[in-house]
Image 1: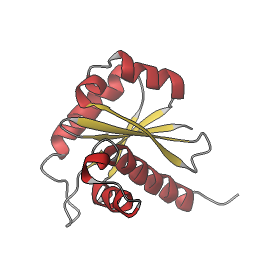
Image 2 (image 1 turned 180 degrees about the horizontal axis):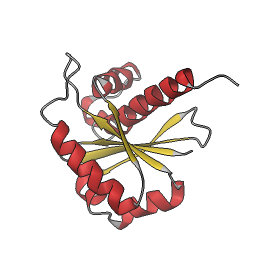
Image 3 (image 1 turned 90 degrees about the vertical axis):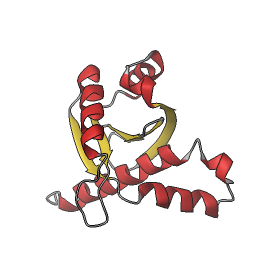
Length: 142
């Protein structure tokens, strides 16, 4: 099953996709959150091109493991996006994914300005990969 991950922010939405075997997460792009929310042609094109069977949204948790203050808003926005796309929706902990994405890009020599358009899609791919790995590790062996 191909899974599309969304790192939904106030301004930008990072998007990543899994391979059909659910082994590898790949960052694909960043779109304005408003375009994703409104099911604009740019987002519909991604849905058509990648044909995801599910949407995975990052959910902000506090370091204590509780849902953060933005969680309710993210749940509502992600729910509306999934409904418009006609896809099932799951949530996963996105805690520290943006920090890890920034660290990774810094290590590759990107400046703060160069990182701006990339952090969100890298963060989406990081929490998608973590989600894929946890599913693979919990699946019964064949």
